[in-house]
Figure 1 (cartoon, helix red, strand yellow):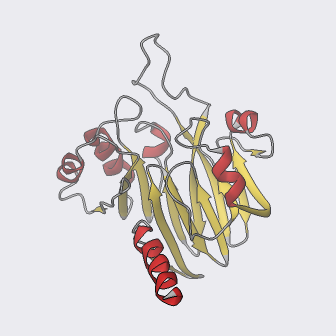
Figure 2 (tube, one colour; figure 1 turned 180 degrees about the horizontal axis):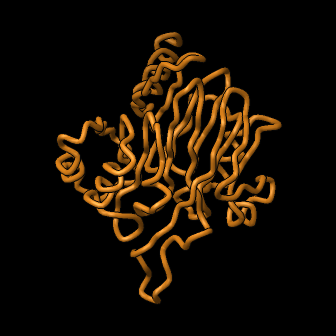
Length: 238
């Protein structure tokens, strides 16, 4: 009976785990695995390293601890001190812009335009900001110079995680992006149609909508029909 009870407990825990589809990309240095977690949180694995971007929402039970944590800005749906504390390995690096360092002093400061090496990875820091979307007082939801996005390169493939941003000129100038993760929800970032316009400009091979709560993703797909860009829709709100 005791064995049966233990088995039932294990099975219940397994079924309680959220389903996490893993995206795999072949590179010259092996396979890169990207796992959507929730909202704007994701995990990247390659070269024996585990990287988390904006670990702030969702369940991390059963996932490996982090060698590196990248944070795009200080809002609570992107930065959780509690999750980071439980997720990082001893000696793990945490990178973020000044607003992140202010909230999390153990983080190392990075700025737009900088680049860092991390094992087999190269990390480029990209601006992320609003041009049109503003609060009632007239201030942008994401002011220029406050938040960032990241381009991560490994084995000849480049992966873009945009953070909270509109389709800014710096995004449209990107080249040779294998896969891009773009936000599209109002009033904080941009509409699906505006996101599609930006995608048509920098032409990643694959694009994933994320941070899209409340957005009509069919509009995004429709706007990119015939563009040659593969749209992959995944459930970030299980």
